[in-house]
Amino acid sequence: MAFTSKDPHTAAEILKVIALGVRIERRQARGKPVKRLENRVERIREDAQKRENQRGKKK
Image (tube, rainbow, N blue to C red; front, side):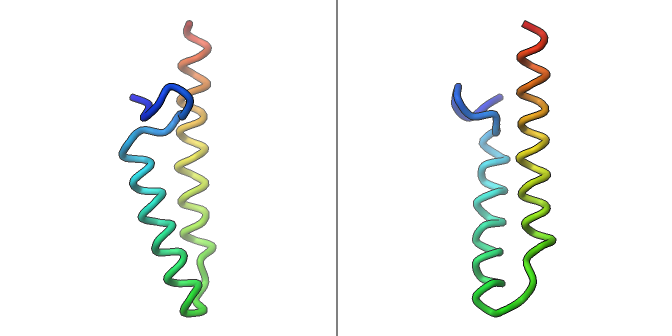
């Protein structure tokens, strides 16, 4: 279920993205690579958008 009517993400997905964002910021501060974590965030967003697009086609 979407967290809000204007957002395709579920509450769990939003929490995952926030947690990954915190990890990204910490790693950047230490000068470590973050591409892998950024890719995970993108994958979560893409999956949520695909799910929302499929939901819209059924109606």
